Image (tube, helix red, strand yellow):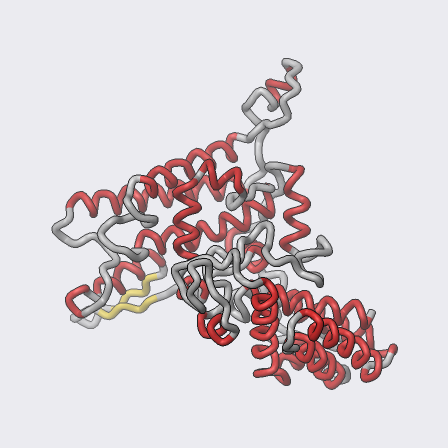
Length: 415
């Protein structure tokens, strides 16, 4: 039941199960040496300085992880600046107090930023022009930190303010995002904040209160903007275009040029790309994915019907995990019909006017094919699907936000 896990069998037949991800990564690197044509991911055996730096960075990653756990998974104490408890007792009017946990976390991030700034490129080591083992050890946890800090603490580490405070860290994140391979395992904030509590425990609200509630509403699609049409080009919290937002084959098919002028290329941002082409390509990727497995998706969504998910089954710590739930077969044909209309709107070609026409056709089709007596039940099924659309499992964020928003448009019509 522990993941990740690797079963290693030695030459004398002994077997050992390894569950520490960093150890697994290092073993895999040993078994795929540079001499066999694989990329160098760790300092070489004769590089004493490199190995020493590797260990120092590994220790720093554990320190950062510890501060993150302290900040997110424990109640924050009072601030220690002039705006904290002492400041209030002394009559200070400065409200920019910061808890010891927040200060410790940000100070540790500064150490990470300094370590990245000490190299000539964006990565932790100079010996390669690509991310190495240490970069991968950090990035999976930093991703979780970005999402959880925004959601539970109102701390947006990708904002302009923190880009200037942690420039090397943000350059490092941008460098990852410019690689297509990273898109395949990069999650979004919603997916992270839903899967973090089962792994680490519940997060505690705190931090920068003025930002926290708006960020939570945005991440969970309840702000009337982040999961609703018309969508903005970019996401204020989760930058979409610091690198390829969709697989390169999709960008090439849509003839979308990056900021370097090349069509469907990695190694460049897409912040100045054609917005109409990008929106259409994102919609169509979501539509292609939905159409490719439509009947099974309808069956899955039908668990959200009034007679769905009532069978006895194993419980899970994850709020939305429900792998053994049975569908509501009475509404399943209607859910399938609704998803076909959603798919038609997603796959519309011809720019904004064609999309508007497709949305009007979706509205008319839903009213015609799904009676008022089934509308709320089908809408409930679409909500079930919307809330369980994961990134990157189902779609990259640029396409997932389109699917969520179009499902919401259909839900509004059915309700």
